[in-house]
Length: 208
Image (cartoon, rainbow, N blue to C red; front, side):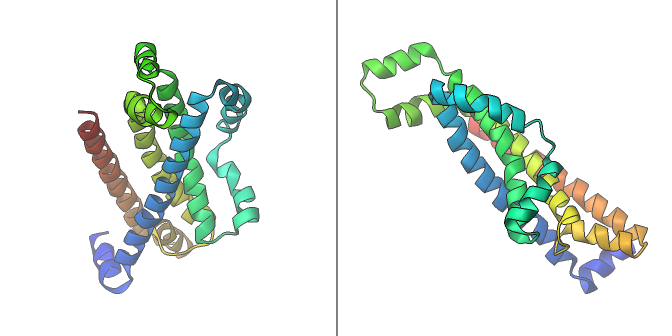
C-alpha cells in the first residue's frame, strides 16, 4: 500500500483528491452551521415557531441522510452543488437541535436582568442568549463537522464521480484494486481523526 500511495502522490494526483474532499466538506459545513445557527436561534426564541415547526423538524431528522439523495438529485442535479447541499443538510441538523436547546435553556434570571436593563432584541440575542447557549452550540458544531465529513464521502460515492477520496475508492473498486480501496479508507480515517481532534481543541479553547 505504501508503494501505491507514493505512485498516487507522484503520478495520479492524490493531492488534488485529498484537497477536494476537505474543501467540499468545509463549504457544506460552514453553510449548514450558519443556517442551523439562524434556524435554531429563531426556534429557540419564539414559542410559536417552536410549536409550529419543531415537531416537523423532529420528524424530518429521523430520515436517514442518504434518503435525501433522490430529492437533491432532482432539485440540484448530481454535480458539485448537489454534493454541497447534501453535506449542508448533514451539518444543519445537529446545529439546529443543539442551538435550539441552548437558547431555550438560557438562564431566566439573566433574561430578567436584560429586560430590566431595556436591552434591545438584538442585544438580548448577541449578549445573552447566544453566549449562554455557546456550550450547546459548540457541541452541535462539533457533531456537524463529523457528520459533514461522513456526508462528504457519501456524496462522492453516491453522486457523480469527481475529484475526492470517495472517487479514489470507487476507482479502486471498479478496477479491482484493493490497494487503492485500502489507501482511500486509511486516508478517510486519518483525515476524520484530524478533523475530530482539531474540533475538540477549538471547542475547548472557545469554552475556556
